[in-house]
Length: 234
Image (tube, rainbow, N blue to C red; front, top):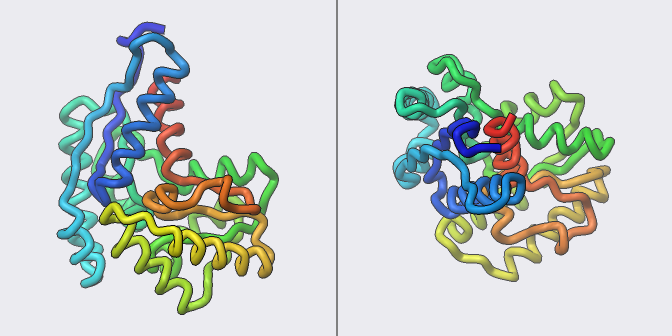
């Protein structure tokens, strides 16, 4: 396959940049694995300032964020991107508005997760992520359309997962004590009937992967990135 046949991936990143680096690595390594030699992906990256996004999230300014991401997606489209990825689970709350603003497809992170979950024949999974992703209905409802039920941690554990994400992982801090906390929470979800665990925040794979957990892990960062490679090479 020739390099010119690769479609261009548009990535809205920076939320946080720690996970954006994972996207870039996974996408390019997967393209190289499939195509061989010196091949790498065609990627346009628009990296936003996460401090501004986090402040708007805290203030509940979702319409403003929808406008910002939609404008960013339009710019990536104008630059020649053939698809859009929003490189964060939480901001898929505004995915419908972003898709409405562009002609090219938006590859939804929960679709990538659902495909992997269904491939393993699972129907009930635990969900870890920011409080927005765990507590607001947009993510669970999207998975429900694929026939997948989600379980979330209790209140105190949701608060701790959110803290670990924002105060540690988004700032490049990977602590073993926090890994153990996440694994304890995963065990609690398993006791409630979870058959697998969605790492529903793109920073969580920085701290937890399959070697740490007895439940099947669904790393949304990697699954989303590979979905983009599938699109780019189709």
